[in-house]
Amino acid sequence: MAGMAYTALRIVREEKASESDRKMFIAYFLSLSAWALFTSLLAIRNFYVDTSRLFTMDLGTFVPFAITGGFLTNKKARRSLTEWIVNVPLRQLTWVHVIRVAAIGAILKMWKGLMPAHFIVPVGIPDFLFGLSVPLMVWLVFKKRVIGKGVLIAWNAIGALLFFPSMVLLYLSMPGPIQVFTDGPSTLEVFQFPMALVPTFLAPLFITIHSAAVYQLSRSPANSGEELLMEGRYIMNTKKETKESEPPPKPSWFKKGRSRI
Image (tube, rainbow, N blue to C red; front, side, top):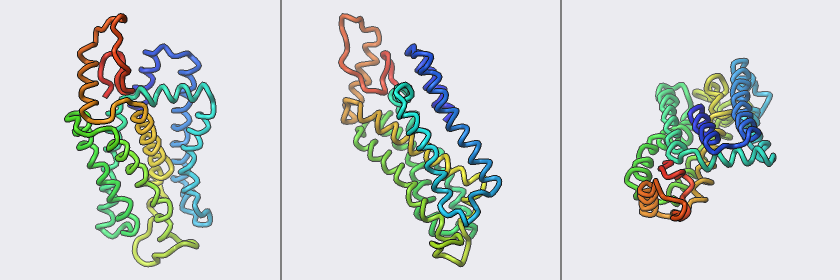
């Protein structure tokens, strides 16, 4: 997140954005950071563990979305966020998901009998495999250029959808009205710090990044890997084009005559 924030701020500065746009953009990232700190404090105090507050964890999941939605309702903030979405390199929006291989830790805990299979098998393992797929997607899309934006859009959609089953499954072994599994390990650790940051901050953040990538791809005129390759070659070879010879419209991840991917 910090890396993308730095990149976005640099891009906004290069584009000579207004001072109000820069302030709005910074306010958005500070708001998300404040929520990350606050939900961490709640988790440390075992706020989410209290089973009398059913689905409190899910309510926490929607806070980052509410923050983003609140900023998007403001015209100036929407312009600043759109500037970030269309200018942050698509390669960066893809690489960030490699962090999800950290789900291997939860898989190992299931293997040791410390976390339930009903949660790790449909949630943790697919998330880990998705993280493993990141280098392959980067190689196929940005190196070999054999995959078009349709596949990349589908890949981002799958990555976002993988998070949603956890919103119910994590309660099935916790005391409460929807408890199904009473024997064996529970998902208690997911409600505690630091794992509570996954459903209340990291998962919404990843979904937002997926949405940003899909929006950026939907604005691109390229459809196939070959078109991406040809556009990339054209722009790199016309770096010093004069204003009298304007190149055709560029995809959103290329900017100022250099590849943005």
